[in-house]
Image 1 (cartoon, rainbow, N blue to C red):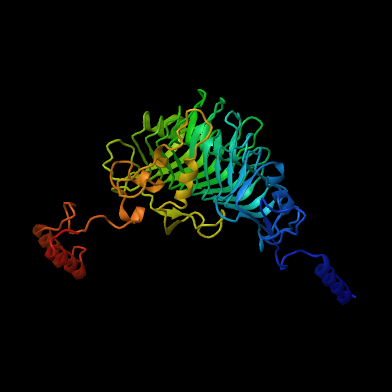
Image 2 (image 1 turned 180 degrees about the vertical axis):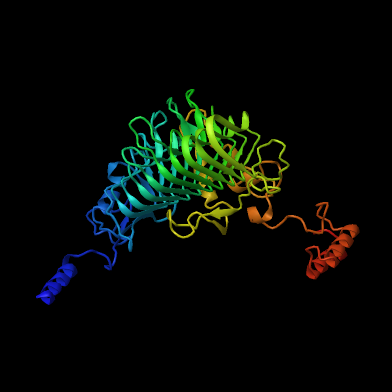
Length: 500
Protein backbone atom coordinates (compact mmCIF):
# COMPACT_ATOMS: atom_id res chain seq x y z
CA UNK A 1 0.00 0.00 0.00
CA UNK A 2 2.84 2.46 0.88
CA UNK A 3 4.44 1.74 -2.52
CA UNK A 4 1.17 2.55 -4.31
CA UNK A 5 0.79 5.83 -2.42
CA UNK A 6 4.42 6.79 -3.12
CA UNK A 7 3.97 6.00 -6.83
CA UNK A 8 0.85 8.16 -7.05
CA UNK A 9 2.56 11.03 -5.19
CA UNK A 10 5.56 10.99 -7.53
CA UNK A 11 3.25 10.86 -10.56
CA UNK A 12 1.27 13.85 -9.24
CA UNK A 13 4.36 15.94 -8.64
CA UNK A 14 5.74 15.11 -12.09
CA UNK A 15 2.54 16.35 -13.74
CA UNK A 16 1.48 19.39 -11.69
CA UNK A 17 4.46 20.05 -9.47
CA UNK A 18 6.78 23.00 -9.31
CA UNK A 19 8.70 24.47 -12.23
CA UNK A 20 12.03 23.87 -10.49
CA UNK A 21 14.23 22.00 -12.91
CA UNK A 22 12.05 23.05 -15.89
CA UNK A 23 13.72 25.20 -18.53
CA UNK A 24 12.94 28.88 -18.02
CA UNK A 25 11.38 30.81 -20.89
CA UNK A 26 12.83 34.05 -22.24
CA UNK A 27 10.45 36.81 -23.28
CA UNK A 28 11.08 40.03 -25.18
CA UNK A 29 9.49 43.48 -25.44
CA UNK A 30 10.07 46.11 -28.12
CA UNK A 31 8.19 49.18 -29.29
CA UNK A 32 7.57 47.56 -32.67
CA UNK A 33 6.12 44.37 -31.18
CA UNK A 34 2.61 43.07 -30.57
CA UNK A 35 1.12 41.54 -27.45
CA UNK A 36 -0.49 38.96 -29.74
CA UNK A 37 2.96 37.58 -30.51
CA UNK A 38 4.36 34.64 -28.52
CA UNK A 39 7.07 37.11 -27.43
CA UNK A 40 9.67 34.36 -26.98
CA UNK A 41 11.96 35.82 -29.65
CA UNK A 42 13.37 39.29 -30.12
CA UNK A 43 12.06 39.01 -33.69
CA UNK A 44 8.47 38.55 -32.47
CA UNK A 45 8.37 40.59 -29.23
CA UNK A 46 5.50 41.86 -27.17
CA UNK A 47 4.69 45.54 -27.50
CA UNK A 48 4.09 46.27 -23.81
CA UNK A 49 5.84 45.26 -20.64
CA UNK A 50 2.59 44.14 -19.04
CA UNK A 51 1.76 42.10 -22.11
CA UNK A 52 4.99 40.16 -21.61
CA UNK A 53 4.73 39.87 -17.81
CA UNK A 54 1.28 38.37 -18.26
CA UNK A 55 2.84 35.47 -20.15
CA UNK A 56 5.62 34.83 -17.61
CA UNK A 57 5.88 32.14 -14.96
CA UNK A 58 8.25 32.08 -12.01
CA UNK A 59 11.89 31.77 -13.05
CA UNK A 60 11.34 33.20 -16.54
CA UNK A 61 13.17 36.24 -17.90
CA UNK A 62 12.09 39.32 -19.80
CA UNK A 63 14.38 41.51 -21.91
CA UNK A 64 13.21 45.04 -22.67
CA UNK A 65 14.53 46.42 -25.95
CA UNK A 66 15.95 49.89 -26.47
CA UNK A 67 13.39 52.69 -26.54
CA UNK A 68 11.07 54.77 -24.39
CA UNK A 69 8.07 53.09 -22.76
CA UNK A 70 5.16 55.12 -21.39
CA UNK A 71 1.73 54.55 -19.88
CA UNK A 72 0.32 52.07 -17.39
CA UNK A 73 0.75 49.11 -19.76
CA UNK A 74 4.51 49.65 -19.56
CA UNK A 75 4.86 49.83 -15.79
CA UNK A 76 6.54 46.86 -14.11
CA UNK A 77 4.24 45.12 -11.62
CA UNK A 78 2.38 41.82 -11.02
CA UNK A 79 5.68 39.95 -11.29
CA UNK A 80 5.67 36.17 -10.71
CA UNK A 81 7.97 34.99 -7.92
CA UNK A 82 11.02 32.96 -8.76
CA UNK A 83 12.70 30.42 -6.52
CA UNK A 84 16.10 29.91 -4.89
CA UNK A 85 17.19 27.91 -7.91
CA UNK A 86 15.85 30.36 -10.48
CA UNK A 87 15.17 34.06 -10.04
CA UNK A 88 12.57 35.76 -12.20
CA UNK A 89 14.53 38.41 -14.13
CA UNK A 90 13.55 41.59 -15.96
CA UNK A 91 16.40 43.45 -17.64
CA UNK A 92 17.20 46.07 -20.25
CA UNK A 93 18.69 44.70 -23.44
CA UNK A 94 21.29 47.46 -23.12
CA UNK A 95 21.87 49.26 -19.84
CA UNK A 96 20.19 52.66 -19.77
CA UNK A 97 18.55 52.29 -23.18
CA UNK A 98 15.22 50.86 -21.99
CA UNK A 99 13.55 53.98 -20.55
CA UNK A 100 10.34 54.09 -18.52
CA UNK A 101 9.09 57.67 -18.71
CA UNK A 102 6.19 59.80 -17.49
CA UNK A 103 4.61 57.17 -15.25
CA UNK A 104 2.98 57.32 -11.82
CA UNK A 105 5.06 54.46 -10.37
CA UNK A 106 7.33 52.71 -12.81
CA UNK A 107 8.25 49.65 -10.72
CA UNK A 108 6.16 47.93 -8.04
CA UNK A 109 7.62 44.79 -6.47
CA UNK A 110 4.85 43.67 -4.13
CA UNK A 111 4.58 40.22 -2.56
CA UNK A 112 7.32 38.88 -4.81
CA UNK A 113 10.21 36.62 -3.85
CA UNK A 114 13.41 35.83 -5.77
CA UNK A 115 13.24 38.59 -8.36
CA UNK A 116 16.03 40.49 -10.13
CA UNK A 117 15.78 43.81 -12.03
CA UNK A 118 18.63 45.07 -14.19
CA UNK A 119 19.70 48.02 -16.28
CA UNK A 120 16.51 50.02 -16.82
CA UNK A 121 16.30 53.80 -16.71
CA UNK A 122 13.40 55.74 -15.17
CA UNK A 123 12.70 59.43 -15.77
CA UNK A 124 10.05 62.13 -15.43
CA UNK A 125 7.79 60.44 -12.89
CA UNK A 126 4.47 62.15 -12.25
CA UNK A 127 3.67 61.07 -8.67
CA UNK A 128 5.46 60.23 -5.41
CA UNK A 129 7.48 57.08 -6.11
CA UNK A 130 9.51 55.56 -8.93
CA UNK A 131 10.37 52.17 -7.40
CA UNK A 132 8.59 50.55 -4.45
CA UNK A 133 9.48 47.17 -2.92
CA UNK A 134 6.95 45.87 -0.38
CA UNK A 135 6.33 42.57 1.38
CA UNK A 136 8.98 40.86 -0.75
CA UNK A 137 12.12 38.82 -0.06
CA UNK A 138 15.33 38.03 -1.92
CA UNK A 139 15.18 40.95 -4.33
CA UNK A 140 18.18 42.17 -6.34
CA UNK A 141 18.23 45.47 -8.25
CA UNK A 142 21.27 46.20 -10.42
CA UNK A 143 22.23 49.28 -12.45
CA UNK A 144 18.87 51.04 -12.34
CA UNK A 145 19.14 54.80 -12.78
CA UNK A 146 16.45 57.39 -12.03
CA UNK A 147 16.24 61.04 -13.12
CA UNK A 148 13.33 63.08 -11.75
CA UNK A 149 11.52 59.91 -10.78
CA UNK A 150 8.90 61.87 -8.83
CA UNK A 151 6.92 65.08 -9.15
CA UNK A 152 8.86 68.12 -7.95
CA UNK A 153 6.07 68.97 -5.51
CA UNK A 154 5.57 65.46 -4.09
CA UNK A 155 5.32 65.91 -0.33
CA UNK A 156 6.22 62.30 0.49
CA UNK A 157 8.30 61.73 -2.60
CA UNK A 158 10.44 58.69 -1.81
CA UNK A 159 12.05 57.87 -5.12
CA UNK A 160 13.25 54.35 -4.33
CA UNK A 161 11.42 52.94 -1.32
CA UNK A 162 11.93 49.59 0.41
CA UNK A 163 9.06 49.16 2.85
CA UNK A 164 6.28 47.15 4.52
CA UNK A 165 8.07 43.97 5.50
CA UNK A 166 10.58 43.75 2.66
CA UNK A 167 13.56 41.58 3.56
CA UNK A 168 16.85 40.57 1.99
CA UNK A 169 16.93 43.32 -0.60
CA UNK A 170 20.08 44.31 -2.52
CA UNK A 171 20.28 47.60 -4.44
CA UNK A 172 23.62 47.74 -6.26
CA UNK A 173 25.21 50.21 -8.70
CA UNK A 174 22.07 52.35 -8.90
CA UNK A 175 21.69 56.14 -8.96
CA UNK A 176 19.15 58.90 -8.43
CA UNK A 177 19.28 62.56 -9.47
CA UNK A 178 16.72 65.33 -9.72
CA UNK A 179 13.64 65.79 -7.57
CA UNK A 180 13.36 63.82 -4.34
CA UNK A 181 12.26 63.92 -0.74
CA UNK A 182 14.17 60.77 0.11
CA UNK A 183 16.25 59.13 -2.58
CA UNK A 184 17.02 55.58 -1.46
CA UNK A 185 15.06 54.83 1.72
CA UNK A 186 14.37 51.78 3.85
CA UNK A 187 11.11 52.30 5.67
CA UNK A 188 9.02 50.06 7.88
CA UNK A 189 5.52 51.29 7.16
CA UNK A 190 3.06 48.69 8.40
CA UNK A 191 5.64 45.95 9.02
CA UNK A 192 9.32 46.00 9.91
CA UNK A 193 11.72 45.89 6.94
CA UNK A 194 15.08 44.20 7.53
CA UNK A 195 18.32 43.08 5.89
CA UNK A 196 18.45 45.87 3.31
CA UNK A 197 21.71 46.58 1.50
CA UNK A 198 22.55 49.62 -0.65
CA UNK A 199 25.89 49.11 -2.42
CA UNK A 200 27.74 51.63 -4.63
CA UNK A 201 24.71 53.88 -5.13
CA UNK A 202 24.92 57.60 -5.98
CA UNK A 203 22.47 60.46 -5.31
CA UNK A 204 22.29 64.15 -6.20
CA UNK A 205 19.43 66.33 -4.91
CA UNK A 206 18.19 68.95 -7.37
CA UNK A 207 14.99 70.10 -5.69
CA UNK A 208 11.68 69.47 -3.93
CA UNK A 209 9.21 72.24 -3.20
CA UNK A 210 7.34 70.56 -0.34
CA UNK A 211 8.04 71.11 3.35
CA UNK A 212 9.10 67.65 4.59
CA UNK A 213 12.73 66.95 5.65
CA UNK A 214 14.88 65.38 2.97
CA UNK A 215 17.88 63.08 2.46
CA UNK A 216 19.60 61.19 -0.32
CA UNK A 217 19.92 57.96 1.68
CA UNK A 218 17.75 57.18 4.70
CA UNK A 219 16.93 54.42 7.16
CA UNK A 220 13.61 55.57 8.58
CA UNK A 221 12.79 54.64 12.14
CA UNK A 222 9.54 54.23 14.01
CA UNK A 223 7.27 57.26 14.19
CA UNK A 224 3.61 57.91 14.91
CA UNK A 225 1.70 55.04 13.31
CA UNK A 226 4.79 53.84 11.44
CA UNK A 227 6.87 50.74 12.11
CA UNK A 228 10.61 51.35 11.80
CA UNK A 229 13.32 49.67 9.80
CA UNK A 230 16.40 47.85 11.05
CA UNK A 231 19.43 46.01 9.71
CA UNK A 232 20.33 48.40 6.88
CA UNK A 233 23.81 48.61 5.35
CA UNK A 234 25.16 51.37 3.10
CA UNK A 235 28.41 50.45 1.29
CA UNK A 236 30.47 52.82 -0.88
CA UNK A 237 27.44 55.06 -1.39
CA UNK A 238 27.96 58.66 -2.50
CA UNK A 239 25.80 61.76 -2.05
CA UNK A 240 27.24 64.86 -3.68
CA UNK A 241 26.60 68.29 -5.18
CA UNK A 242 23.20 68.75 -3.52
CA UNK A 243 21.70 72.08 -4.48
CA UNK A 244 18.11 73.09 -4.93
CA UNK A 245 14.84 74.40 -3.56
CA UNK A 246 13.89 72.82 -0.24
CA UNK A 247 11.06 75.32 0.41
CA UNK A 248 12.63 76.17 3.75
CA UNK A 249 12.55 72.60 5.02
CA UNK A 250 15.76 71.23 6.48
CA UNK A 251 17.76 68.87 4.33
CA UNK A 252 18.69 66.21 6.88
CA UNK A 253 21.77 65.38 4.86
CA UNK A 254 23.17 63.22 2.12
CA UNK A 255 22.73 60.42 4.66
CA UNK A 256 19.99 60.72 7.26
CA UNK A 257 18.40 58.35 9.77
CA UNK A 258 15.28 60.03 11.14
CA UNK A 259 13.46 58.79 14.24
CA UNK A 260 14.63 55.49 15.74
CA UNK A 261 16.08 52.98 13.27
CA UNK A 262 18.19 50.13 14.61
CA UNK A 263 21.32 48.34 13.42
CA UNK A 264 22.35 50.78 10.68
CA UNK A 265 25.83 50.59 9.16
CA UNK A 266 27.94 52.77 6.86
CA UNK A 267 31.08 51.44 5.16
CA UNK A 268 33.20 53.58 2.84
CA UNK A 269 30.51 56.22 2.14
CA UNK A 270 31.05 59.80 0.93
CA UNK A 271 29.08 63.03 1.43
CA UNK A 272 30.66 65.83 -0.59
CA UNK A 273 29.80 69.44 -1.49
CA UNK A 274 26.17 69.36 -0.41
CA UNK A 275 24.94 72.96 -0.17
CA UNK A 276 21.17 72.57 -0.14
CA UNK A 277 19.62 74.40 2.81
CA UNK A 278 20.26 72.52 6.05
CA UNK A 279 22.39 69.78 4.49
CA UNK A 280 24.54 67.80 6.91
CA UNK A 281 27.00 65.30 5.59
CA UNK A 282 26.01 62.21 7.58
CA UNK A 283 23.23 62.48 10.15
CA UNK A 284 23.72 59.07 11.74
CA UNK A 285 20.60 58.98 13.84
CA UNK A 286 17.92 60.50 16.01
CA UNK A 287 17.34 58.19 18.96
CA UNK A 288 18.80 55.45 16.80
CA UNK A 289 20.24 52.26 18.27
CA UNK A 290 23.39 50.41 17.21
CA UNK A 291 24.67 52.63 14.42
CA UNK A 292 28.22 52.28 13.08
CA UNK A 293 30.17 54.26 10.49
CA UNK A 294 33.64 53.29 9.30
CA UNK A 295 36.02 54.71 6.70
CA UNK A 296 33.50 57.32 5.56
CA UNK A 297 33.95 60.95 4.51
CA UNK A 298 31.86 64.09 5.09
CA UNK A 299 33.45 67.06 3.32
CA UNK A 300 32.34 70.60 2.46
CA UNK A 301 28.67 70.32 3.45
CA UNK A 302 26.29 73.14 4.36
CA UNK A 303 25.91 72.28 8.03
CA UNK A 304 27.63 69.63 10.20
CA UNK A 305 29.81 66.92 8.71
CA UNK A 306 28.94 63.97 10.99
CA UNK A 307 26.14 64.41 13.51
CA UNK A 308 24.01 62.41 15.97
CA UNK A 309 21.06 63.24 18.20
CA UNK A 310 20.27 61.19 21.31
CA UNK A 311 20.21 57.41 21.47
CA UNK A 312 22.97 55.01 20.71
CA UNK A 313 25.27 53.32 20.98
CA UNK A 314 26.95 54.95 17.99
CA UNK A 315 30.37 53.81 16.76
CA UNK A 316 32.36 56.15 14.51
CA UNK A 317 35.77 54.86 13.47
CA UNK A 318 38.36 56.00 10.93
CA UNK A 319 36.08 58.63 9.42
CA UNK A 320 37.09 61.99 7.95
CA UNK A 321 35.01 65.13 8.37
CA UNK A 322 36.46 68.45 7.27
CA UNK A 323 35.72 71.87 5.76
CA UNK A 324 32.01 71.72 6.60
CA UNK A 325 30.35 75.14 6.94
CA UNK A 326 29.02 74.75 10.50
CA UNK A 327 31.12 72.11 12.24
CA UNK A 328 32.83 68.85 11.42
CA UNK A 329 31.26 66.87 14.24
CA UNK A 330 28.18 67.53 16.30
CA UNK A 331 26.18 65.88 19.08
CA UNK A 332 22.74 67.02 20.21
CA UNK A 333 21.09 65.73 23.33
CA UNK A 334 22.25 62.68 25.21
CA UNK A 335 23.98 60.20 22.92
CA UNK A 336 26.16 57.19 23.71
CA UNK A 337 29.09 57.48 21.28
CA UNK A 338 32.35 55.62 20.72
CA UNK A 339 35.02 57.42 18.64
CA UNK A 340 38.28 55.98 17.32
CA UNK A 341 40.93 57.12 14.83
CA UNK A 342 38.84 59.85 13.23
CA UNK A 343 39.99 63.04 11.53
CA UNK A 344 37.66 65.90 12.45
CA UNK A 345 39.66 69.03 11.66
CA UNK A 346 40.14 71.59 8.90
CA UNK A 347 43.90 71.34 9.43
CA UNK A 348 43.97 67.99 7.73
CA UNK A 349 47.16 67.95 5.63
CA UNK A 350 45.56 65.59 3.11
CA UNK A 351 46.28 65.37 -0.61
CA UNK A 352 43.01 63.57 -1.34
CA UNK A 353 39.85 63.40 0.77
CA UNK A 354 39.62 59.62 0.40
CA UNK A 355 43.19 58.73 1.38
CA UNK A 356 44.33 59.13 4.98
CA UNK A 357 47.88 60.20 5.78
CA UNK A 358 48.03 58.23 9.00
CA UNK A 359 46.00 55.88 11.17
CA UNK A 360 43.42 58.64 11.63
CA UNK A 361 40.78 59.24 9.00
CA UNK A 362 39.21 57.37 6.10
CA UNK A 363 40.83 55.53 3.24
CA UNK A 364 38.34 54.55 0.56
CA UNK A 365 40.04 52.66 -2.25
CA UNK A 366 38.50 49.17 -2.27
CA UNK A 367 34.94 47.90 -2.58
CA UNK A 368 32.99 46.88 0.48
CA UNK A 369 30.94 43.73 0.05
CA UNK A 370 31.29 41.00 -2.55
CA UNK A 371 29.27 42.12 -5.56
CA UNK A 372 25.86 40.50 -5.82
CA UNK A 373 25.73 39.24 -2.23
CA UNK A 374 22.66 39.66 -0.06
CA UNK A 375 22.74 40.34 3.67
CA UNK A 376 24.24 37.36 5.47
CA UNK A 377 25.85 35.73 2.44
CA UNK A 378 29.63 35.12 2.49
CA UNK A 379 31.56 38.38 2.12
CA UNK A 380 28.51 40.66 2.13
CA UNK A 381 29.98 43.06 4.72
CA UNK A 382 33.71 42.57 4.18
CA UNK A 383 36.30 44.87 2.62
CA UNK A 384 37.29 43.18 -0.65
CA UNK A 385 40.42 43.38 -2.79
CA UNK A 386 38.43 44.80 -5.72
CA UNK A 387 39.27 48.38 -6.70
CA UNK A 388 36.49 50.91 -6.16
CA UNK A 389 38.02 53.40 -8.59
CA UNK A 390 37.41 54.27 -11.36
CA UNK A 391 33.89 54.20 -9.94
CA UNK A 392 31.71 51.60 -11.69
CA UNK A 393 29.45 52.94 -14.46
CA UNK A 394 30.60 56.51 -13.85
CA UNK A 395 30.23 57.55 -17.51
CA UNK A 396 26.56 56.54 -17.54
CA UNK A 397 25.95 58.25 -14.20
CA UNK A 398 27.48 61.52 -15.41
CA UNK A 399 25.62 61.43 -18.73
CA UNK A 400 22.24 60.95 -17.08
CA UNK A 401 22.81 63.37 -14.18
CA UNK A 402 23.91 66.07 -16.67
CA UNK A 403 20.85 65.72 -18.88
CA UNK A 404 18.77 68.92 -19.01
CA UNK A 405 15.56 68.80 -17.02
CA UNK A 406 12.58 70.96 -16.14
CA UNK A 407 13.55 71.92 -12.58
CA UNK A 408 13.64 75.74 -12.46
CA UNK A 409 17.12 77.12 -11.93
CA UNK A 410 18.79 73.72 -11.85
CA UNK A 411 22.20 73.51 -13.50
CA UNK A 412 22.37 69.80 -14.21
CA UNK A 413 25.95 70.10 -15.46
CA UNK A 414 27.43 71.28 -12.18
CA UNK A 415 30.03 69.57 -10.02
CA UNK A 416 31.31 66.29 -11.37
CA UNK A 417 28.93 66.66 -14.33
CA UNK A 418 30.78 69.72 -15.64
CA UNK A 419 32.53 69.54 -18.97
CA UNK A 420 36.27 70.00 -19.03
CA UNK A 421 39.60 68.39 -18.31
CA UNK A 422 40.65 67.21 -14.90
CA UNK A 423 44.02 67.92 -13.32
CA UNK A 424 45.13 64.41 -14.25
CA UNK A 425 44.81 65.27 -17.95
CA UNK A 426 41.61 63.45 -18.90
CA UNK A 427 37.93 64.30 -18.85
CA UNK A 428 36.33 65.21 -15.52
CA UNK A 429 34.71 62.10 -14.09
CA UNK A 430 33.05 61.19 -10.82
CA UNK A 431 36.34 59.62 -9.77
CA UNK A 432 38.57 62.56 -10.74
CA UNK A 433 36.15 65.07 -9.18
CA UNK A 434 36.32 63.35 -5.80
CA UNK A 435 40.04 62.63 -5.86
CA UNK A 436 40.96 66.11 -7.16
CA UNK A 437 38.71 68.03 -4.77
CA UNK A 438 41.71 69.37 -2.86
CA UNK A 439 43.47 70.57 -6.01
CA UNK A 440 45.85 67.63 -6.50
CA UNK A 441 45.87 65.41 -9.62
CA UNK A 442 44.08 62.09 -9.42
CA UNK A 443 46.70 59.34 -8.91
CA UNK A 444 47.30 57.16 -11.99
CA UNK A 445 46.24 53.98 -10.20
CA UNK A 446 42.93 55.59 -9.24
CA UNK A 447 41.92 57.31 -12.50
CA UNK A 448 43.45 54.49 -14.56
CA UNK A 449 45.85 56.40 -16.76
CA UNK A 450 49.55 56.36 -17.56
CA UNK A 451 51.52 59.00 -15.62
CA UNK A 452 52.09 62.00 -17.92
CA UNK A 453 55.73 62.43 -16.84
CA UNK A 454 58.64 60.07 -16.78
CA UNK A 455 59.55 59.24 -13.20
CA UNK A 456 63.11 60.46 -13.84
CA UNK A 457 61.73 63.89 -14.80
CA UNK A 458 61.47 65.24 -11.27
CA UNK A 459 60.64 68.83 -12.27
CA UNK A 460 58.03 67.57 -14.78
CA UNK A 461 59.10 69.74 -17.71
CA UNK A 462 59.04 66.84 -20.23
CA UNK A 463 62.86 66.88 -20.41
CA UNK A 464 65.28 64.54 -18.63
CA UNK A 465 68.45 66.54 -17.91
CA UNK A 466 71.83 65.31 -16.66
CA UNK A 467 71.23 65.93 -12.90
CA UNK A 468 67.90 64.14 -13.11
CA UNK A 469 69.48 61.17 -14.91
CA UNK A 470 72.25 60.93 -12.30
CA UNK A 471 69.68 61.05 -9.47
CA UNK A 472 67.63 58.39 -11.23
CA UNK A 473 70.65 56.11 -11.56
CA UNK A 474 71.38 56.65 -7.84
CA UNK A 475 67.84 55.51 -7.00
CA UNK A 476 68.43 52.31 -8.98
CA UNK A 477 71.72 51.63 -7.21
CA UNK A 478 70.16 52.09 -3.78
CA UNK A 479 67.13 49.94 -4.61
CA UNK A 480 64.70 52.85 -4.42
CA UNK A 481 61.96 51.46 -6.67
CA UNK A 482 63.81 51.87 -9.98
CA UNK A 483 64.79 49.00 -12.29
CA UNK A 484 67.78 48.66 -14.59
CA UNK A 485 65.47 48.68 -17.60
CA UNK A 486 63.93 51.98 -16.46
CA UNK A 487 67.40 53.50 -16.06
CA UNK A 488 68.36 52.36 -19.57
CA UNK A 489 65.15 53.91 -20.92
CA UNK A 490 65.88 57.24 -19.21
CA UNK A 491 69.49 57.14 -20.47
CA UNK A 492 68.31 56.56 -24.05
CA UNK A 493 65.95 59.54 -23.77
CA UNK A 494 68.85 61.69 -22.50
CA UNK A 495 71.14 60.51 -25.30
CA UNK A 496 68.51 61.57 -27.83
CA UNK A 497 68.26 65.09 -26.43
CA UNK A 498 66.27 64.53 -23.24
CA UNK A 499 62.87 65.45 -24.67
CA UNK A 500 60.17 62.79 -24.52
